[in-house]
Image 1 (tube, rainbow, N blue to C red):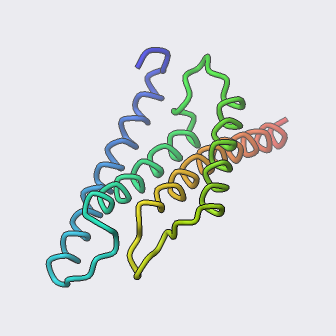
Image 2: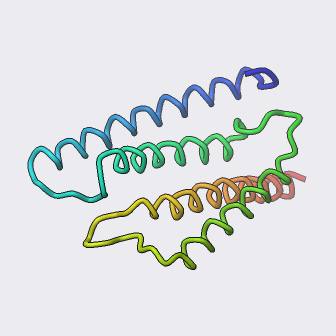
Length: 143
C-alpha cells in the first residue's frame, strides 16, 4: 500500500471490513433462503456467491472513491474514471445486444455478470465525478 497516506489506509481498511461484514450478512441470508425454502434465484451457488461478493466489492470501491482513498496520490483520477465509464458502457452495450437472456425461468443466468460488471464500472466513474463536483462546489462556497 505504498503511495497511500495513513488516512487513506485507514479508510481502505475500514471499508474493506465493512464489505466483509456485508458478505457475511448476505451469505447468511442466502443460506437461510436455501435452508427454509427450495427457491433458487441463480443458476448455481457459485453464481449466487459471485453476485453477493460483487455487491460488497461495489460498496467498498464506491465508498473508497468517494472518500478519496481509492486512487494513489500520483494516479490520474479523471483518466481512470473515464476509462471505467467507457468499459461500463461497453459492457452495458453487450448486455443489450446479447442474444442470451439475463433471467431464464425466473433464475438469473451467468449473463447477469455483464450487467453487474457494467454497474460496477459505471458506479466507480459516477462516484469519482460526483466527488469532484462536490469538492468544486465546496471550494466555490468557501472562496
